[in-house]
Image 1 (tube, rainbow, N blue to C red):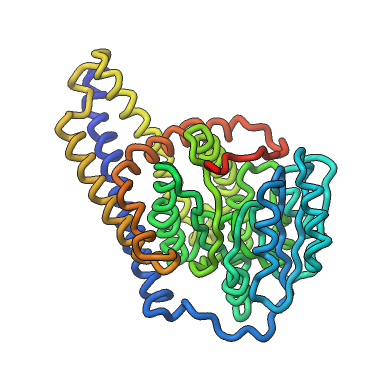
Image 2: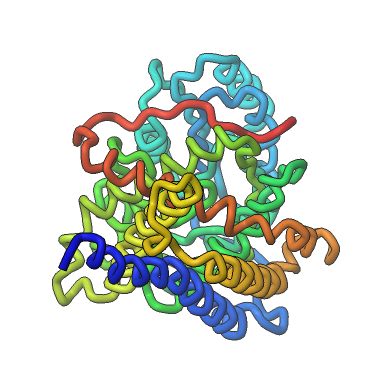
Length: 423
């Protein structure tokens, strides 16, 4: 059998995998999201907090790097939390702008705020650890330096720890607040239709791929047990999630714990963000996956399988795109190319499936938006999501995974100021 014959037999399977895998995962996430909603969110049973009279002391830790523009708004929102006993710890991680002076001024204004200054940029993981070392609370709520917490965010996060001694972390529900561009609107839908549904589904199956680093609460004892955050991982939130679950700590998702965040609205900023996510996720998988292959790690097998198959899908997607482009240039025989009729039908089916998924997800999340029209506005742009974000995801994974393999272990993961959207 010639190489051409082998390719002619193998490539249709690759094209089928590229087409059917996302459809299957859409179905899984939609079913999981609906089940979680029916069990934990329906009929308003989770929308009203009981009266808060007392609770554990909470430390809100905010790592800051070049956050001069955002620090005041973020910290004032923290100071307005509806919780009886909390402190705020802002860690200035060697910022090069006026963050240090801004934080010191806020410390004079807000009695509950303490500021820790690091002489040099050490990276988010080390900044979080520095905050944890001086914290007096038994629960740490960790947020980004540009996040705006809903006044009841801390209460929703912390109340889950009261009767669950093995609960190590509770991840909140980030909401996009910059919606002035197509990329911004698509990410509003993405955080509901993809990230929100995935977290709901994974929580039902018992294990979560990652907490949201922008808003998450940790039990201090759990962090101490797993050795804190890992300084050389580009996604410290993914890393610490796997470390917690490796030590049998449970991770929950609280959809009512809202945090309003800024996201990239340029292709360059979005690419840098997704490449970092892909490389950091690969770092975590390569480091901890062997620990979960034993029988006592079986509850993570679903997360591991989804990650492996999704990574293979990304490479298959890149291969399909390359063959299609080369075919248009006349460099690949027609027998090896996906049929144009199949591509058009596949694109239409995926667009409809994506619209259904987004509609259900936005319906579930609609109570977190100020108005019904605002909740469903992203549906106007959802047709572009598979074309833009799936290709971006495939490309970032294809580049990020080998970078993680080649990355020198122990190299400190320092950060730079991200794209925060149009102002």
